[in-house]
Image 1 (cartoon, rainbow, N blue to C red):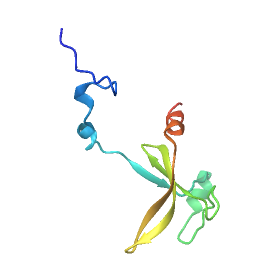
Image 2: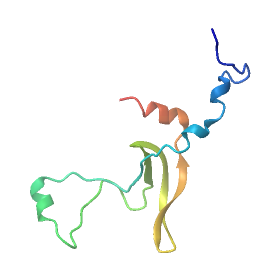
Image 3: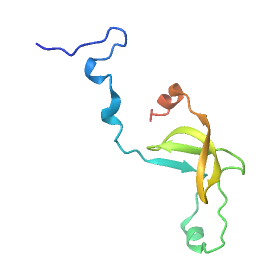
Length: 102
C-alpha cells in the first residue's frame, strides 16, 4: 500500500505543501457599512432622498466579510474617485474559527 510522504517537521503530506491549487477559488468579499430592519410599509414609502438609519454610528469601523464571515475591520477611503477600504484590524484566527460555529 502506498502512503503519501509526510514531512515530520510540519506534519503535512508532501502533496499538500504547495497551496497554489486553491489560489484561483473565487470568494465573495463584502464590506458592511451597517444594517437596518424595516417593515414592508416603510420600505415601500422610500424614495429618492430618503434616509435609512443604520445600526452603526458615524465613524464606526466597516466590517469586511469573506463568504459572510467577519475577517477584518477598516475605514472607508476614496482612491482615484473610487471607494475602497483601509484595513485597520484583522480578526485573530482563533476568533475567526469561533465565528464559523453556528
